[in-house]
Length: 548
Image (tube, rainbow, N blue to C red; front, side, top):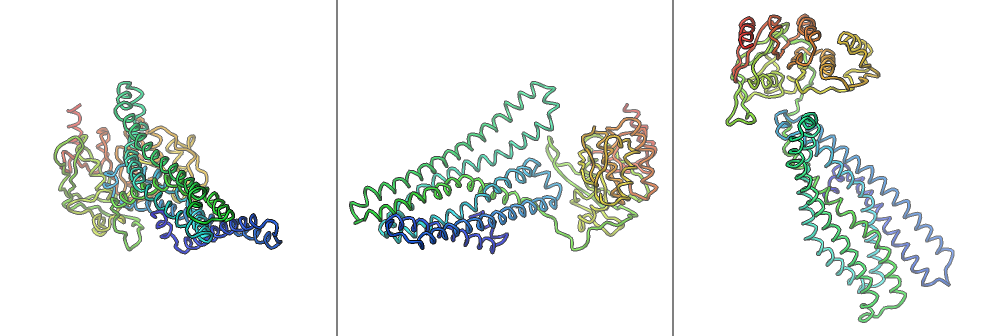
């Protein structure tokens, strides 16, 4: 039912057409059985018209099934594609702190495993619809042959369906538990890939990871999944048994109470045998439909946790130039991992101006990255506000506010396709930057696409710097960009890149521990245990030398 609602929301007209053609296929198939039964009973008096009717029914079955299959496949895949795009759009519009809370593993499981499960179930819909039509039409033909036998058939089918209800609920419960464990499995797979170096270097940690984390979760997932699918296997074989029991009842029991001719019994048994295949296919689809139902519920629950920000009614084109960034009473509170209580950054006031380079310094855990996320609009303050030129607010126009920034965080991401890659002038500019960054021998640009991202961390950061340069946003933020660079490129960044951005009138914010270059900053901001204060670069240099 959930899948039918998914298809109906996409296009109820297409679903109706597919349903009607599927029913037409079922009627034609039942007509074939009736024609065959009639021909066997009256074999000696067959006429050419009987053969023409048979051929016409065959053509109708084939054409109706093709139309139903193709229309349902197109509708189903379009519905799944719409769902994927809708979830992706909603995910990217969800505030960044909410995404952090949900976790990458849960989001990846939803976008990959759940949508794939639903897609596989949707692929079953054409067969299910046609087979349902065949079964209904065959039941109609059975009623035409003998109403008492149809009543007996209906009673056995209802009893069989009733006996499926409780086992199917248990099967869905086990599959649902397995699906919840799959989120944990995805989290462990993330640890396995992200921590591969540490696990290879430390055998004891590797053993702990496999024995206490990955192995128990994997085993429990297998037990729950096998339990659910085993129940389905029991249900399917029990259903086949009931169907053969029905054939035996018609052959050996019914004639004791009802006057039945050999021709009628032959036609009835022939129809029942024909129904075995579509009924078996319907029952074999139950596990796939059950898993899809669990995935749809999981997606619905997770989608409800995606707090989509309001879509602005105006364009999201940023201003070409920004004069100032003003922070007024900005405060943000969050829980820090491994600590009791809350950590609060601020409240603080700052006035940053275009055409200046501002360094942000502070110890680990002091709140520098939180401040960076606030300044770029990825975090929204719980108190106060940030404004660009006194107009664009991070609190009321957050999406537009964010478009003014180009940032390279420590956990940055690279994209193969360049933005505006069809502009020859931009491509040439990118190639010039590649040469300056000494990446031209590693990376080529073809059709607006970077030839490779398989580079060292320092080279990848230089490539991220290239992308940020080409964005040409009015505000730039660099979070420890120089940390993975050799001395040559570290000096290049501080003495060439930053002055160039200053000269171009950009508002530049740099998180840095490189005290050797503090004197190059126009202003220094120190973050210390939640306080944000402007300080003098000479004092910071003296303090860092004392600590050394």
